[in-house]
Image (cartoon, rainbow, N blue to C red):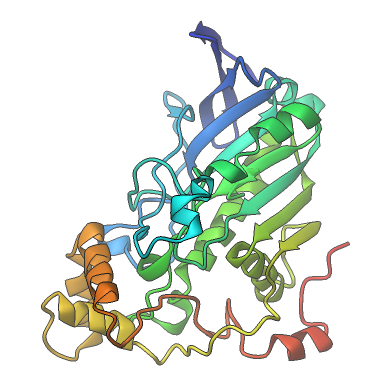
Length: 338
C-alpha cells in the first residue's frame, strides 16, 4: 500500500490504496493520531428505478480514480421538524449536520494514523457503529457520536460510522416504506443497507489496518435493536466477533406491524395525488416524487394532528425482522459469537 502526502492549512492529506480503490483521507492537526476517511459510498444511489429496492453494491474505483474521503456524504433524507423538545432545542449535538440526499449510503472510517499508513503491519479491532433515532433520524454527521477524540486517545482501534467504521442507512419512508408494490423481503431496506455496509467493512477494512476477525457491532437505541436483529437474521454468517447493545434489543417488543399493512405508504401517495389501487402503479408514482416532496407531505399531515399517525419503521418479514424473538433466543436460533 502506498501513501501520497500533501499539506494544507494544518491538514495532512493521505491516499490509501485499498482493496476498494484509492481513497483520499486526511489527518487534522488537532487530532494528529487519527486518519479520517469520510463518506465512502458502499452502494449505488438508491434513486430512480433503484429507489425502494435492496441496496446495490458500489463498483470499486478504477485504477485511474481516487475516492474523495475528505468530507462526509449527505445524511439520508429525514424529517427533523416536529414540536420543540430537548433534542432540537438544548441537546442539538444529537442532530445531524449539513445537507441530506438520497445518495447517502456511505461509510466513514477513523483509524490510527500509523495503521492507515502501514496497514500491513496492523490488525486492529474494529467497531462498526449503528446510529439510533427510532429508524427515522440520524446519520454519520451527528456530533455526539464522532469518534475522533476517542481514536486519537486510544490509538489502538478503528471506528466505522454508522459502522467507527460508521455506515449510513435509509430512514423513515425511504428505508421502511411498507409499500404494497414491494416483495415482503424488500420492506426493511434500512436493515439491508446496514448489512451491506457491514459486508463492505468486512471486505475492505484490512486496507486501513483493521482486523476482519475482530469486528464489533455497536448500536444505540434503534441502532442497538438493529445490531441485535442482525444476530437473528444472519445467524450463520454474522461477520462479527462481538455486539454491544446500548439502550435497545430485538427482545423489546416492536409495535406490531405486518408486511400486509400498507396504509401509511398509500396514504402519502394519495395525499400527493395518486388515484387507484394498483400497488405497482402506486410505487411508480411515488418514485416520481422528490425526497423533499415526500417529507413535506409527511410533515404537513403531522401538524394536522389527525389520524393516521404515520409511522415508517421495520416490519415483520420473517427474513430480517421476526415475530417471536424470545422463542428464537430460547431455541438458540441466533449468531453465537465467540
